[in-house]
Length: 406
Image (cartoon, rainbow, N blue to C red; front, side, top):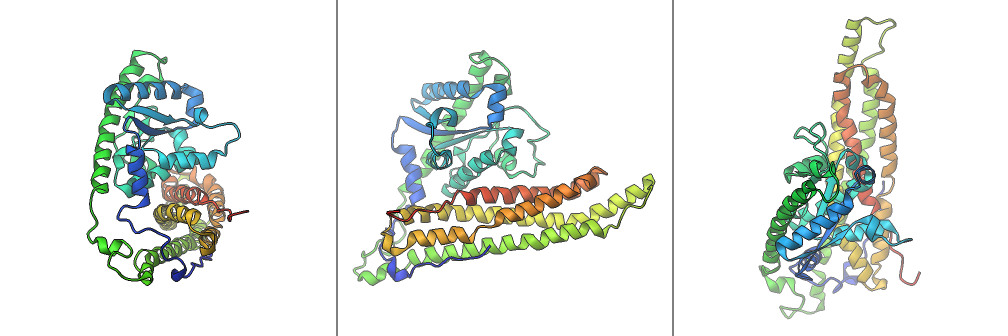
């Protein structure tokens, strides 16, 4: 990955961004919460494999809407991709728009959900938005089936950890019965009660933020202190591009660390030496112990890099959404679209990193069958692959913009 970012001159950008103490994301969030006092926008995120097996989404959507309305007087507008996407519509852009516009995000979690790149992307995009706004209550995790072997406090999967922190609800009793059963109605009534409480907490929090005056309005509003147009160059604008440069550089540097880490993991396979011909039980035990020790440090390094990369990507995702909005609204001659596209081009090539790591781990699968110790020693590396993959899925949503008139 290379950093090809070339920001326009600050003097060319003066006046493009309105100085406002409320961020565009906060305006969007409070707008979606309050634009219609009688309607709540909900995004239902689920694995299609689960829907094929349980046929659960229609009763979930219908009963949730009914009970929320009965308990709060607010109607639910739920986005369900199979119902809401028109034929021929580009699903990626529509899903992304619906995720970011939703007031409440409900992931129906399962093993299939965790294995789905699209589901992970949906979860991570909304989680990033909710965390940025400080309204974690708007993400309401649901477990399709009670699966303690997967969803537990020892899990290293970030989605499982996030969902556990939010105290997931289990709907297994309803899913295993017919739609319209008392189990479905009791379950959805319970979920609706929590839904209403969480929404009210988030709504109150965002309303408080939107009513908080800036500490120094003269510093935030261009021209408020009577200075000339040259003062429009300062604060906000220069900081914006400095932040972009810092974050993209940091992201690139983290990604570049993965190559040597992968090489170290490959070298570790040789460090323990070969297993001799016709080994006895003790020979195998000794070899697996040495191999596990050799794999441990590089595997943990890959895990650490993957986690750092994902956190950096989520952080940059917030800024990229804002920059994309600015690029689309700003005058073409300022070159925002070209700058945005060059940023994206500079972050390409990460797919090759995942491919190299996947290939190495696949080659080590036979080794893992020898012992639990070997599997445990390589587990962090597989966790690192998941985090890099999650990062790539987020980056792939930063699609290039078409120049005006093209």
